Amino acid sequence: MKKKIELTYEQAREELDTLVSSLEQPDTDLGVISAKVKRALELVAFCKDYLHQVQEDAEKTLDSYEKE
Image 1 (cartoon, helix red, strand yellow):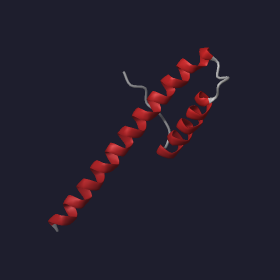
Image 2: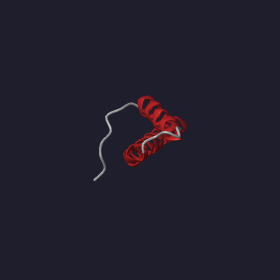
Image 3: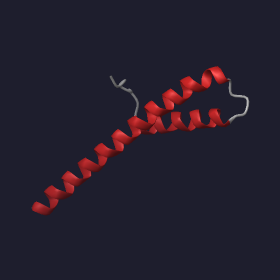
């Protein structure tokens, strides 16, 4: 079951940027990496779903505009 993320797209992107930056640090604790990667994957899925929905909404709007 997918975990629902209660963030805006912008908040998810900011958190992803922070996670990536911390993972790029050579002193990142190996015990923390797994949890950070898991969270990053959740955020990526959230962003992809969000962008897909925006694209669908835009296409519907354009379709309805063209029919007028």
